[in-house]
Amino acid sequence: MTKTIVLALVAATLLSGRASGQVAPTGDAWLRRPVDDRTFRAYLEFFGYDQRLPFDTDAGDTVQLGGARREHVSFQSTAGTRVTAFYYRAAEGGRLGSGVVLLHGGGAGGKDGAGARFIAELIARAGIDVLSIDMPHFGERSDGLFTTFAEAEKHDRLYNQPPAYLAWVTQIVKDVGRSVDWLVAERGVDARRIGIVGVSRGAVLASIVGGADRRLAVVVLSYGGHFDALENGHLPAACPANYIGRISPRPLLMINGTQDNDFVRAASVEPLYRLARSPREIVWEEAGHRGVPAPEHQGAMLEWLREHLR
Image (cartoon, rainbow, N blue to C red):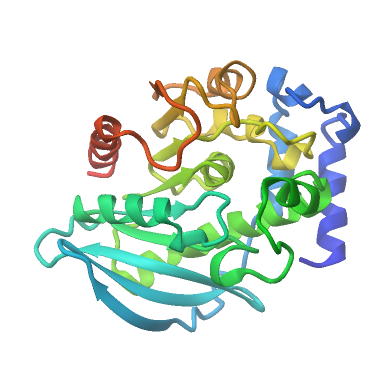
């Protein structure tokens, strides 16, 4: 992202009349009162991308997984930026023609992390295509920003650096938009039946993408929230509170843990959920922070996706 765009994003932030210094570790002004429509429209202008840009798809190895197959792909997102991904689809005869974009959590492996692989295969075996993408700085898109991928390092170098975090969020919104385009153009998925699933940090991003890109038909957030335990502030254009209420009338499902010490129920999850609008549902598990929903709620997630991607 160019310096001009970053400065423009910061300028759009100031339209809200709230500076980043007003953010507190357990909440911010936008949790209490999200930005108005005019300010929100200003944010959306920066998520645009060139839809005419060739994908220049590079398709690699395909692995059979038993009931599904996984193809290693990459494609051009924005000029000079490529998305690396795994494309999952059900075995022949089981494909439903719908799809989801999957955003992983904060593990070093990105899309290749155990949790992301498990969820992608689970959804694909249910007949829904999955494009599981690496977010910038993770997986195959690792570029040296992180060396240990410890929580303190990720927060010090990205999550608690408001301008850099905003630029990161903006690129991911564009990457997901291009992923939707790719699923339709390159793999024949029905454009009206594509959703997004996010896990942990990916759920934070999915709440933003879901509000910004209205083509997404359904949004599932697994073990995410507003702030995690180590965050101390972000700019309003990167705040889930300014997006989650705009997912409606598309359905939203949240899955969270009652004992999660990362995305804390009272401080991070419930205040964000209150901003969501119908149709919405939250499922609580008696668990701490985890990357995969409990077995009894995996079925609920699949049913939610099947119902709303029919």
